[in-house]
Image 1 (cartoon, rainbow, N blue to C red):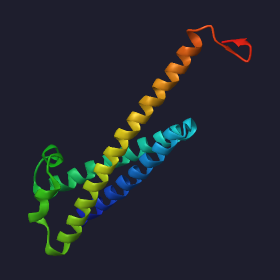
Image 2 (image 1 turned 90 degrees about the horizontal axis):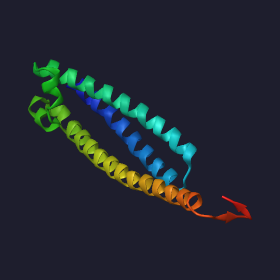
Image 3 (image 1 turned 120 degrees about the horizontal axis):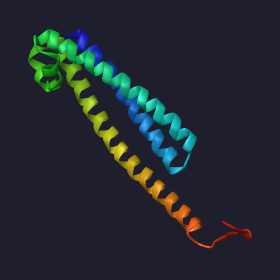
Length: 144
């Protein structure tokens, strides 16, 4: 089960980086830094792909250890693995499980906030564009 702990630690590091990236994204959304948003979105896509691969690795490891299919392993909750751990790994596993749960909650919260910020920014831009395009508006004596 030491290999499982290594996989979970790598997943924890990736989740931590995703949380940092979502925080950075939130700042870029607030400050309307579109170039930064593109860079951050690309980085997040790479992280999510790597995290998905690591998750598949975890499923394969669990399926091999428990003698179940990878599909069944994908539905195994981490908490159900406690009986298979040695006492040496128990605390580290429990800590990793808690940290992963906390990071996932934090990431989901940041993503929800970022979605709202992105929607508001999009709505604001639409309203500004419709104001200029649907009225006889002049800016600096130039018809827009």
